[in-house]
Image (cartoon, rainbow, N blue to C red; front, side):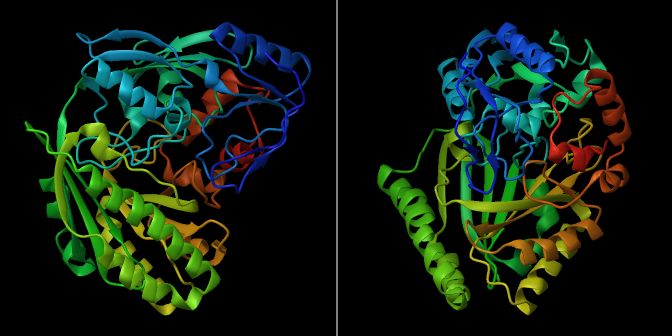
Length: 436
């Protein structure tokens, strides 16, 4: 493990920078434990950092930064039990390939696969689905290093309280070194994507949620147009997109042309509404069938900043209409679509779907574009609906707010007091969102 003073670290979006005093790349839980113990002896704080896909400062530290690139081994595959145990630093895209090689798959995923497993789960990354949502909900066990250097394991039957908190733990309870996921036999999804008007989508929202395994849509600000995605399990046969269609839709249009449109909009904001109308019509309807992980995820090369809120599912229609009015009446020109997803309620203490069926509204702005006024106005709408922000995406909420919207927030803080009383894993973000 190197002790050379490291250069500054930046996240994917480039809006967060850390200046750690030391970087370590451990290859085992024992090396993580040693790094934590050494940091404690020197009075330094410790934070693990994954792929840097959080937009908040959740992973920043001026102490010891742990990079998990050496914690990527597959420890066990038990197809009969439906579990796989894997090092916390493995990236989701690699994990998908490994699972596919064993004829296995995750039940649900978000729409990108570049994050580390611990980073994605620790911040509550989720997909969309009527029966499954958060990636963390598929965890069946965790191995962690606590603030005193102890290596512990937890599950629903072992250290159950730690398990309830640590599946979405924000890095506040310890350094996750391995995760055991529930997996299932590999399956196919039929993807049906088509344009609809916003009124049509919102008018049929409940039916679209109920009738599809995985439903989401993108609304294009400054228009009344949406792109609707419905993914459903099928016996096949597989009918993947042709290489030419994938190249055209997912690379040339969704990344190349869209990136050019964003750069043009940044230079000439008044052109954004016109660009939005053209963009909403650029992607035509398509249907294809492929391996689940290839349908769930897409390449995202245009960089942006993002804020996302979970609200009670029944509040979605009114909240999104308020956002629509905000954009129509306001001065902000928004080049990125607004993404809407759903998830069932779960029992994880800091999951954004904890205890309630949820809808997610995610707003984005092209990197380098002023986003504060737009995000602040949207956040005001979301908090009026008891919204819970994604822990890895921009927001301004604090511990006082979270105490009102999370039923187990006090339980999490009590657990943290027990396992990290000296705040070895603390930073400014955790002071804000968890309090002192």
